[in-house]
Image (cartoon, rainbow, N blue to C red; front, side, top):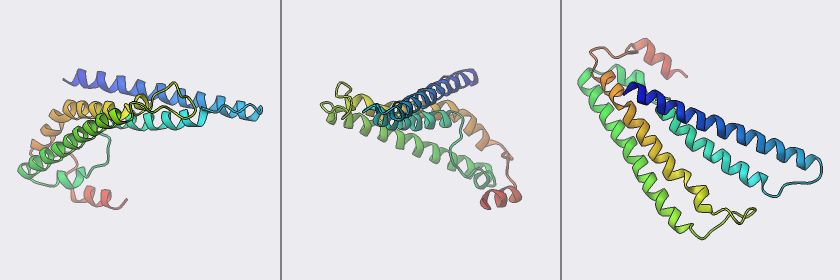
Length: 173
């Protein structure tokens, strides 16, 4: 399972890197063209889309690395029983939220099926907005791949980071 998780994480990392490179090149080309007095009509719209895609796919990558904001010190200070219960509830809420986001994202795609981009009318808005249900599924997969590790941490007699000093340090910033 660990190898599968690391492979999944690496794939998402490369997706994020590729999107960052494409965004940087696209914006640079747009600036160069604008400087030469031949502005590209589509570059700012595409840059906005790439930034949104980078955000959504980057969130999936962060989920695979368990890098989203949380309160591990607070949960770590709990005894194993309540810590496990809180971990299960949190994981269920996260997966439930992204299942709902994915469902609603898919629903919106049907509504946007006939719309196109303003500056590039050959590109459908539904293709652009497909990042929402796709990233929701990617985040759910990441949560499921990291779930065994989270549950093992919650079941441990003394969870990593379970100190009053650590909790105070986390709360102070």
